Image 1 (tube, rainbow, N blue to C red):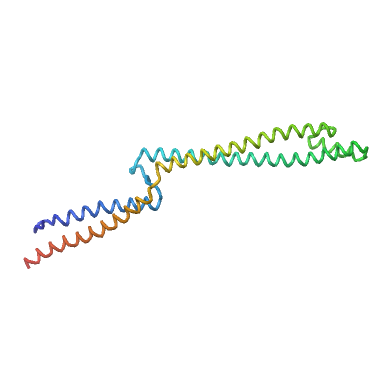
Image 2 (image 1 turned 180 degrees about the vertical axis):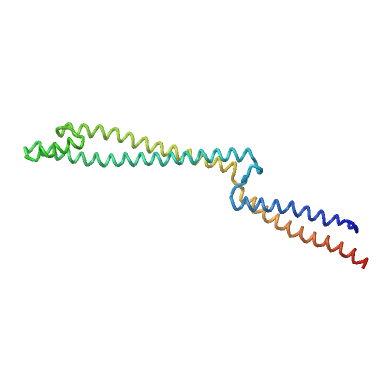
Length: 201
């Protein structure tokens, strides 16, 4: 209905264009961030739950790195044990051969924390290898469990925060069409008012 004092159709079209623009901007934000919940005004409870799960995921990922670092320390210890084993073998050779270099290797073995003879050295190395193997196994197990926890928490966070990209693409198309139609309707409503005012000229 068009009157001289107010253009109700133009006001309604303008108001609806404002609502559509808000929805279009929200959809564009969701598409660009990949998140359904970007601010507390979208869904405060989901934002809180999603951020908590995201923090737990990052904490678990940090635990993965820590466990991997522990594994590599144990791996280095394993390499050192292999070198010490070679040293103990050389020590045994010298013990059996009565070589004058025996004292030099025995001194070197003592500095390396090995025993005073090859048997004692090999016993110490075996104990170290058992302890180290357990440490490597635990580090790998911890890394695996932390990785699973990180993935699980990330999935939980995505379930709270993630956007349904297919639905958001459909919304984008819908709101773009509504903006075009609304702009056209507003233009027509304003033109009707101009036509009526033109009658008074």
